Image 1 (tube, rainbow, N blue to C red):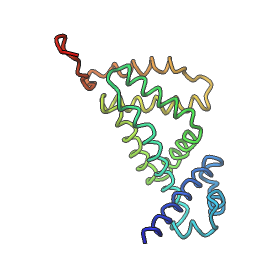
Image 2: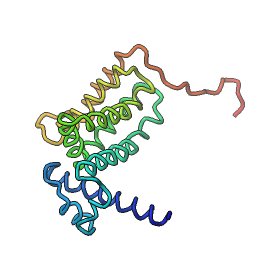
Image 3: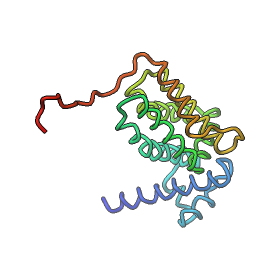
Length: 198
């Protein structure tokens, strides 16, 4: 039974990856059973066996993407010890997101779906909360929300705009935003006292 479940999970993952690939290449509205199965190298009826309909597959695929992308970027906030480290983490995350064209396309496709459908709005809010959690470890929810708007906007500008900031310019803005938060706190790094033996 475990082997069958493992195969089933592997097939579902292949279908989600394939759906994300089709979305990236031609948008949510272009997703069909045939395109997904072709991209996954699976038989045409496979989607129907694993999902009630395409809408369920699409929502699952976006949730899968959110988990994957969140894990990728959350680790960047682990070693923050001061304002400069936090600004560097935000700029680094923005750069990685901007350079990942698939992520930018999927992010905006998901946002567009969120305008239309409640299930996507709930997924986006969950993702937003998770994305901001790294900043909220050190700063207020208000500052985390402002920084989220900055990194989302910067990712779009870097991909489709004509006036994107350099990393240095973005860092300057991020640092200024961080410093508006008088409640920010960082872990205290223990230092040796002058009389301690090495």
